Amino acid sequence: MAEDDRVERGLALLARLEHESLSLAEVVDRIETVTTDPTVTRTILDRAELRGIIEREDGIVRPKSRQYVRFGRDVITKEGEFSCRRCGSSLSTGYFIRVDAGEIGPFGSSCIRKVTGRE
Image (cartoon, rainbow, N blue to C red):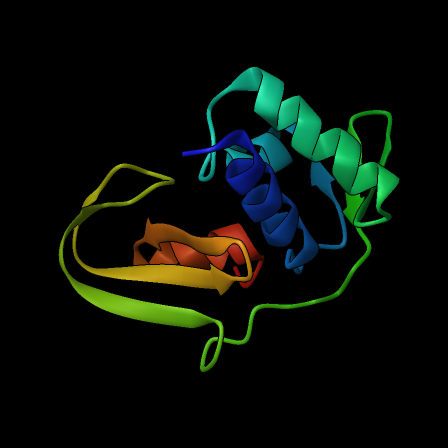
């Protein structure tokens, strides 16, 4: 997978967070559903700040874009054998967030809510 795809999907994910604020560790947890490469993670955070998607201060990240995930439109489900990108659990139904740069996932039913900020 190309770095640009990971960066664009990471930016799209950060733009869709429904949290008032998150710790930097919590944001990195979300980004790790797209990439575990520390260089790409830093690039995503830096570009997100430059583009006004997030604000960072003293280890706290505040999402700014408010492009929330709409579960009826932006989330698709697929049946099969998957592993959750967040917790690693085995899944028979995977939930994927559709963004312009591709899909982010699969996630289990509780992890998709945690990743987007619904829980």
